[in-house]
Length: 174
Image (cartoon, rainbow, N blue to C red; front, side, top):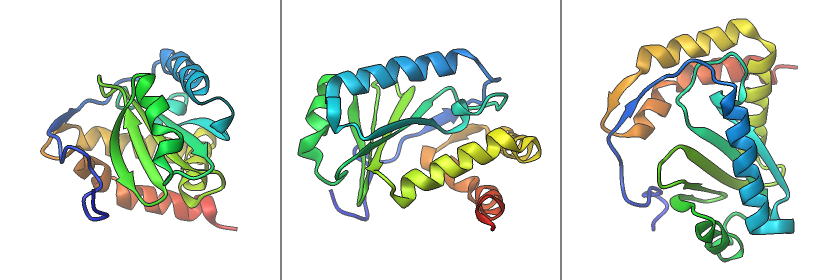
């Protein structure tokens, strides 16, 4: 797979549905965390619930996003076969980042390096939204306004990038 085509299987048409906050999302994350740790053992350096389902009170696509930090995300042989045996499917291959998901597409496991920019960015954004209700509501409003059918599910994510960048500027300001 080339660097300019990170999606395994190509773009997917997908309906984006934003659901009201659900306390079951935290329980689902915990089940998936245990499944990942059981599959990889001490190769798991860190695992975190990220994304909108990790922010209490935030409406979200009902997809559990997980950051999994490993020694070298580009060394697929060290973890992908075991995650595939645990039921995940490799979907994205980018330098320093892989994404595997469940066949039902309701869990995304983002594999990155411990301390990487990828990991830090997601944790900062999550923690900021947890602590700042005005930005949490602003982000939810944008997501709800973008809900619908997209020819490429990644285009939905791209459409939120301006508001995310604005929130991140404040979250990272000294």
